[in-house]
Image (tube, rainbow, N blue to C red; front, side, top):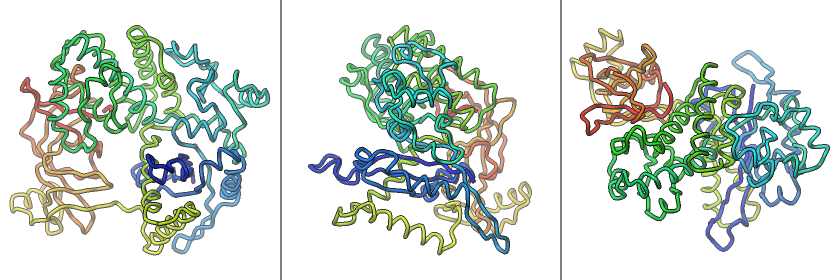
Length: 524
């Protein structure tokens, strides 16, 4: 069974108080990579493995802090655990496949440079900082491997290698750290590249070229109907645009980039060079957010990144370090899978439970033990209640089916209609569906088939949800708005939630030009 480890540091006290930093903790979590991705994203399936004061890591080093953890992991690799399933006893062995975290945390525990200003800041390749500022493609001959890594560790020359010390996790059986090729989507894009370029591009469009009035720009941000999106981008101050940096959280920045083309595209000409850079990066983002890939898309992704970086250098100057990480994205995806499943955002959410525990106790004496015991008690409760991978199935107010819907359901789906009731919403695995939401029900001729939910049918007997939908036809993809143009058809259709082509709802928007568009976060 494959496992991953996520490492991060966080503050348990008041981050703005007089004692901020005094109770800064380091946490390592383990995640079962063998379970379905939709289960991996649930906080109950992210397990606390170790907790310590972050100052101990600074004073004692990686070897002292992680030695017990590595010994335990090697025990799981070599000896495993005996598991009984009904009458069958199975010996289960484990393997560490990836270390996850943000750039600072990963570089710390891997023994690499912890500063982007270092001459060799990249943990995946040996390219120097000056060359990386203008590198629009990855240099495969500069990738780190087991041979040059061992040589760099032996040389003990941080300035020319970017390696401070040998990685302690090389002591884990069958886990050479140079194969830990990973990028963090949230910190590299929404909190990195997207934040840089949103400020640069909209500085030009709003303040320099003035193709969008500043007041209209903010009015659209305030009034746009984001529907199911909870992380709505806030209004932008004129000082932020002047400084060429728009300040938003990672989730808000992701929402901004997803819907900015449909919000502001009407004001901008298609041949505007700054808008072309924006749309190109929007397409790269959509590809990187995809949940599945084929090998043909890697060359396409590399070409898009090369073109984007070349345009960026021409318009704005040298690339940032997080631009450089983008050139390795296709390699990361080919080795580790979709980046959407590796981003630190979901793992960092696990800190909240620890923070709530620390805020509910009146002492900070051995706070690590206090938090760890609380985590153990919650996990023990789950075992005692025999809770597995809970689907999290719930719904809103329930009512009886109408006669028309009941007959149609029986004729089309061949279901026992007595088991079903109607609801105004249903929530499955933390994804909520409401009436009027738009979903993707199929893929036809390389175009997604969209449908708007008209009625939600619920069966608690089988934990089933069936949607009665109006079906829409895709008329094509509009690059300028980065959205599909749709036309409503006369067709109605029942579709099970489990049969959706993509389980995430998408936003349908009636544009001022009279056309209907739908915006997807990732590629179809």
